[in-house]
Image 1: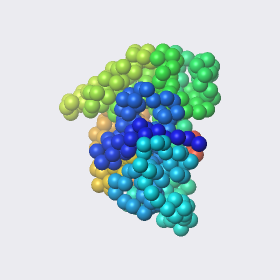
Image 2: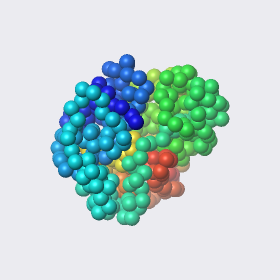
Image 3: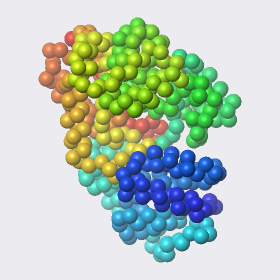
Image 4: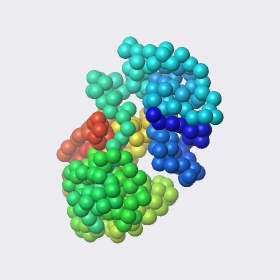
Length: 396
């Protein structure tokens, strides 16, 4: 029987208020609480993170089970504890409830899909319009706890050597692909010596397929136009063997600063970061890239299990705004590629409106200058990788 002590209970309630009432990201909130409660033991830390993520994930179904709505945090956390066999410690005023009725409502086989799988009705409707019965098939995977995948940094090691090195630090793992490693169980790998030495990055297995699809060669000039904090830039640099030039662009200096820190740890010396602070930054790069990666902003619906709070903050208006931004980036940045060069358009969404329809429209309007070589939606798998879209185009 797990036991949730009062400090953890209070921490969970505060975290949920931060996420739902204040709009902060769940992962950032959990990190903040972990730093603020360094005296918590490993049991309390695991229970805190598990409870917060799970309550956020199953928010709508828990509210239904408890016959309440709005910001009923104590009720919902108490329901989660009851469903998971967690005893609530002394000093906590546990809400009273007909727990048998709660379980009956939770397990009701007649629940509408949006309630049963715990997501907003508009999102369920829109996604089903996009994917049809495929949406029913992948929804359970989107509500699981995500497994942990690592990418071995081939500038410093191999996947096989990384597995052995992690075993020395008592973290069992196995190889999955050329550079991929999957942990047998969750662990804080950021505390390992292997991480501090730059031997790996935490990166989903399907996310690793994006840089592989770009197929950058040593000595080429490559641009990552939406680099963010640089997970894919680091992979590209490794595939280039640090030979050539990789220009990583983003509109946020803070993210580029994080990329510079990560590239130093990884030994990725071919990366040059540039802030997009005016249209001149892009114009100067016209017709200059052998390879261009456009990992564009998107709804993130392929990685919901890693960011379960995103589904409660996303709106149809935001999805439509993102689609407009995707078109703007694809149409505007494609000119950076040389004739004969290649471009990858990628998202961490699984929705056709953000993916193949965008690419099909682009190629249709640029049939004399661009050719589509491949287009693939990688759907999330149970106990497997997340959902992504990857397309490869060639400039004629």
